[in-house]
Image 1 (cartoon, one colour):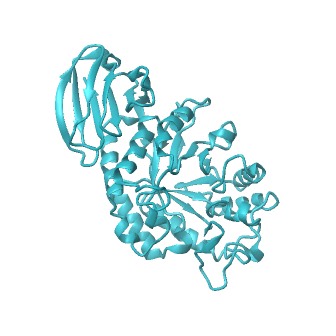
Image 2: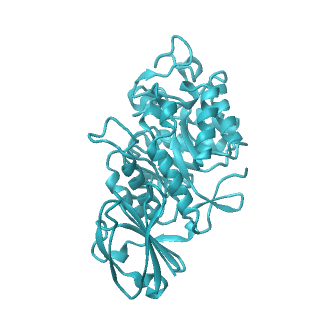
Image 3: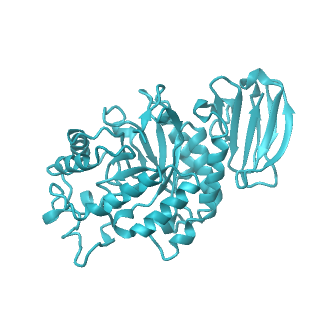
Length: 401
C-alpha cells in the first residue's frame, strides 16, 4: 500500500496511482474499548461492505467522564496514555493498543484516520487542561516518529471543539507531526463546523473535514462551499448524525444515512458514516455492524464506482432558482453523464442540455435503498420535468448518452 495522495486538481484522493473512493466509518474508542479479536471482526466486515477508511481516537474519554479504562485506577487525573499525566511523555505500553489497531487496519487495507488529541468535547484540552501548547508539539513528535512509516495513516488535528478554540495547541501539534518525520496527509476535525473556517490556508491542512452533527440538511451547502475554496482541497463530511443516534430529537434512520452520504458526494466531497452503538460500544455493537444504513452504503459504493466518479463536478445550477431546495446533482466534466439525488419525493425541472447537449438521453430512476432500477425512459431537449418515483422515500436519477 502506498501513501494516500491528493489528485492534481485538488478535489479527490489517489492511492497507488488510482483514484481512491473514501467511504469512512467511526470507531472512536477502538484502542482502549475494543479487544484485538473485536477489532479484527469489525475491520473484516467493514472491508467486505466496501468501507475504505476508519476514524479512531488514540486517546479516549467521553465528555470529561466515562473513561474507557485500560487498567484499574485510570481517571482524568491519571490517564494511561501518558507518563505522569504529561502528554510530552507518552506511555509506550499504552500505545501498544494503538499499534494493534494500526496493524489490523493494514491487514485489511483500510486507511486509519487517527485523532490523537480527541476525547469527546475537548476532554483533554478544554474540560481538563492536559494537552497544552507547552506539551502538544512533543507529544505529536513522538507519535509521528512512531508511525511515520505507516502508509495507511492520516492525521487528524483538533480536539472535537470549534476550530477557533485553542489554535495555539493545534499549530503546535501540526508542527510536531512534521518535525517527527511524518509525511502522511493531515486535516483538522472540528466540532460543529468545518476546518476551512479557520485553517484552510495552512500548509499542513491537506483536506477539509466537516461536521454537521444534527444539522444534516446543511451537508450540500457546506460541502459545496469547501469544494469551491481556493486552493482546492478534498472535502470530507466526517461526522454527521449517527445511525440510530439517541441525542438528535428524532430518529436517525437509514434514509437520513443515505441523505448525508449522497449529498456529500454529489456536492463534490466524500463521506464518513457512524453508528450510535459502535462508537458507544453498546452490548449490541456486533449486531449493529449489519445496520440498514451501513449495508445501504455498500450499495452507494457500488453505484458510484460503476462510473468514473472522480470526473463528477457538482452542478446545482441545473435547477435554476431552486438551488438548495432541489436535488443534489453532479455532471461529469465531459458532460457525458449526470446524477441527481432526491432526498424525498420531489417534482422538479432540470436543464438537461447540460448533459450531452440535451440528448437524446437515457434516464433511469434507481432506488438507493436497494440499488435496483425502477424505470428507464428517454428524454431530450433543453429542459425536462421529473417526478421522483412514488415507491421510494428517496431516489437517484441517472442521465447518460
